Image (cartoon, rainbow, N blue to C red; front, side):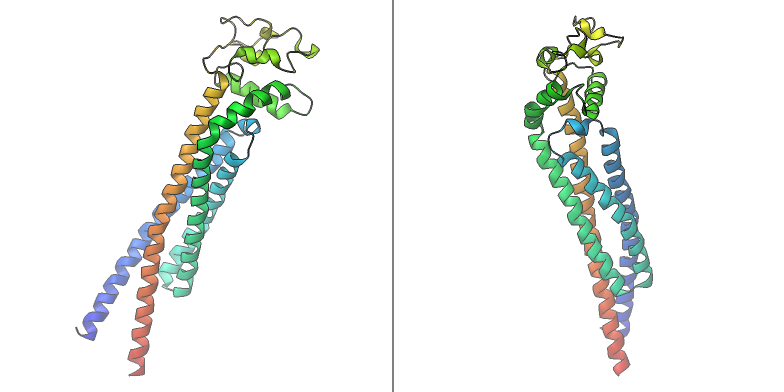
Length: 262
């Protein structure tokens, strides 16, 4: 094979890889936007409910996705510049960031999956206690607002059923004003409507709020896990293409040095 044919083959491979990396960067940016969007959406959409959870794993997974998505935006720009300039050093930095972001998103995906597995047990152990002991108590305004929103959004009453409220600190206090359930249990909220717990007045859902919240959080954990692991796999493809491009540039530089020495 002649030296000219080798040069033409090398140029063709370099051009193909360059365009493939441009396509990857476009997909990479879109994936980063998806990761960032899911992270922000998770925190904004469920910010009230986070105070009802015993652990911070759900929130941590979302924060990790936000960090990863932000890094993707910056890294994608760096990748485009590195590919255009064909600088091995810049491409090596880009390759390093791809691996770092891959690990970050993989951690977020794994955390979401692990938390998904023990979500039901955590809610059963802690939600009833949180609602009965902290609702409408001094300094627990965030939990009170979260419980009220939970019962109205999911049209439920109590962690397992409306009878759970009979054992709560709030209902047993003078502040309840003879209510048997909080007003947020009512289908139509009016002043002191919680004094009457007839099915025509309050929500009575099989499984209570635990079942509703568990399904809601489980669905979103699956989204977090799928997006995190999906984009992480996409980055492996980018890392492979980048490594190939770096290798071709290295070979071209070697050939140029050999030609110059002659």
